[in-house]
Image (cartoon, rainbow, N blue to C red; front, side):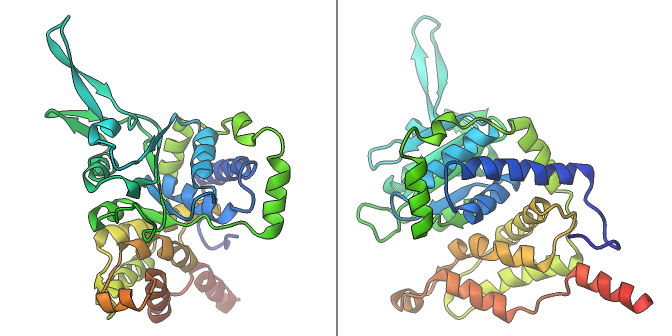
Length: 337
């Protein structure tokens, strides 16, 4: 809901809301009861970021990625990360062609619209790092030649919880490249019963049709960047990140990239609600998924089993929340009456 004293959403932001509802409804045909994680994943995609899904096997991580790719009309490629996977298996390789006497670059599966990096923490660190340039710069460099990736380009990576056997912990630099880290979670009993009924016959993913295209996604991204963020809310986002760096249980807190991510996801969440401005709840709603995976806890906290999410919750409680612009405008209007 917008206040009459605040800017009304322009037509392109209204289109973002319709775009998001159409995508969300389409994904819901495949995934039951996952509106929350779908919304945050879509917000991450609208921000131009990449998503890390961590959860137990069989919770729908792969299906969420496939449903989003189908709904957005993006080409989809899946790479199963294993200990013997080489970097060139992901990015591509130059092959010598005797007929021409020249090397020809053969693109790897990363040259797609949406790449599902399945079980990324089962690959070696060298292969994991092969994604860094692609995720950060939107390009691949092979034999000194740079190859641009198609746009839009999205990586959705999945990983099993790090304590599972046969996994390699993602390094901090790799984790920081992921805009959001999310968990799909188990369905409730009623949702699981509903899922069983839906999947008794053909799987709905096989008949899922696009409700948007790559150009629609790029236009929606441009509209999201126009969402207004007040100076007070910029300071609030930066202060939350700064508090993670000074928290007694944190050895390495969030950096400036975390603050940028917090602002960007808050803008996307506002746009999904049809608002042309960010409110504090947008930043608070984005903070756990943006900040928690960027925190490296001190050894005492890790030994005590302290989850990074609890540190983010403490930071949110400790930092004063600036006034909601809608509430401020309402109070000003009431005083003028």
